[in-house]
Amino acid sequence: MPSIIAMVSSSLYNIVDSIFIGQGCGPLAIAGLALTMPMMNLAAAFGAMVGAGSAAITSIRLGQGNRAAAEHILGNVVLLNTIMGVLFTFLGLFFLEELLYFFGASPDTIGYASDFMRVILYGNVVTHMYLGLNNMLRVSGYPKMAMYLMLLSVAINLALCPLFIFGFGWGIAGSAWATVIGQTVPLILQIIHFSKPTTFLRFRRGIFRLSGSIIKSILSIGMAPFMIQSCACVVVIIVNNTLATHGGDLQIGAYGIANRVAFLFTMVVLGLSQGMQPIVGYNYGAKKYDRVRKILFMTMAWGTAITTVGFVVCEVFPREVVRLFVSEDGSGDATKLIEATVHGMRVLLLMFPVVGFSIIVGNFFQFIGKAKRAIVLSMTRQLLFIVPLLLILPKYWGSDGVWYSIPIADAGATLLAAVLLIYQLRKLRLSPDSESSI
Image (tube, rainbow, N blue to C red; front, side, top):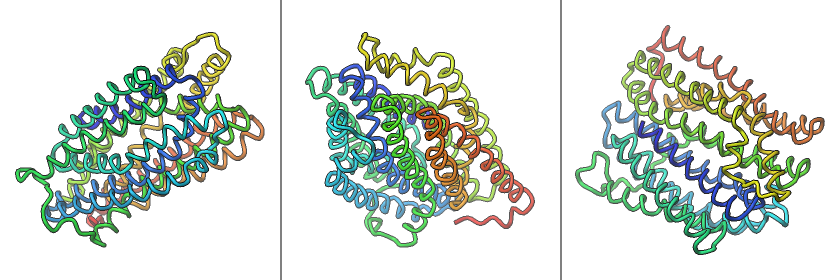
C-alpha cells in the first residue's frame, strides 16, 4: 500500500499539473507539455536504470544476509545518480530547442515546451537522487517513510503550482519550478535519514567508491527499465511527429492528455509491482520459490483488476475526464482538443485490461535478476510491435493509425509475456536447484 500510494500520488501531481497548465495556459500549452515527454522519458530511463537495478540487487543481498554489500550499493547509487544527472542536464540544456523541434514542436508550441523543460533540466540531479534514494528507502525496510516523502513532494508541488501559474503569472515554467522545489525538500530529508547512525542502511565511510561489480549488476538488471523508458522515448517521438503530420498540434495535445490518464492507472500497477519487488527478491535470494509464485499470482490478479477499472472509466466517461484538462469555453481549439482526446482515449485503451498483467510479468523477471527476459519483453512491445505499426498504419488511417497501433501492440506483448512466464514457472517447479541468485 505505501508503494501504491506513493506511485499514485506521483502520477496524480503530473495530472494535476497538466490540469493547471491546461486551465491557466491554454490548449497549445498542453501540446507543448506533451512535446517534453520524450525528454522526460529519457531522463527517467537513466534514473530507472540505477533505481530499479540497485533496488533489485539490494533486496537479494539482504535476503542473503549481506548488509555490508547492500550499503556499498547505496554509496554507488549516490555516485551514479550524480554523474548521470549532471551529464544529462548539460547535454539537454545545450541541445534543448533542437531536440524539441525533433520531437515534433512547431513555432506555436516551442516556447511552452522549452520554458517547461529548461527548468526541469536545472533540477535533474535532484530528481535522479530523490527517486534513487526513495527506492533504497523502500527496499531497506522503510516503505512508509518512502511513501510519506513522496506525499510530501506531491503536497508541495500541488501547493506551489497554482501559486506560480495563477498568482505569480509564471505560466508553464511555474509548474516546472513547483516540481523541482517539491522534490528538493524530501531529498534533504532522505539525506538526513541515511546519515543517522540508527538507520538500518546508512552512509558510511568507504561506501562512496565506484565498484565495477556493483555497477555491472545494477546496469544489467536496470537495463530492462532503461530500455522500456528509452523505447518509450522513441515511440513518443514517432507518435508526436506522425500526429503533427496527420493532425497538427492539437492531436499531440490529445495524445498527451490520454497518455497521462492511462499513466495514472499504470502507476497503481507499478506501485503494486514495487510492493512485490522486495518480497520476491528476498524470497528468491533465500530460494523460497513457493512464496515467489504466491506473491506473483496475487500481484498479477490485482494488476489486471486495476487496468480493467481504468478501461471502464475511460471508455464510459471519456468526456468527463477530458473536461478536467480543457474547458469548453467556446473557442475552436478547445473544442477540437476535447473531441480529439475523447476519440483517441477510447482507442488507446482498447486492450488496457491486459496491460496490468504484462507490466507485472516484465517487472517480475527484472526483480529475480532475469534481465535478458525483461529486456526482451520491453523491446518486443516497443520496437517489434509499436514502431512498425506506427510507420505503416498512419499511411492508410491517418491519425487513427497512431491511436490503434498501441492497443494492437499491447495484445502482442501480452501473449509473449504469458509464454515466457509459463516457461519460467515450469523451471522453478521442475528444477528449482538450477536457479541461481546473481
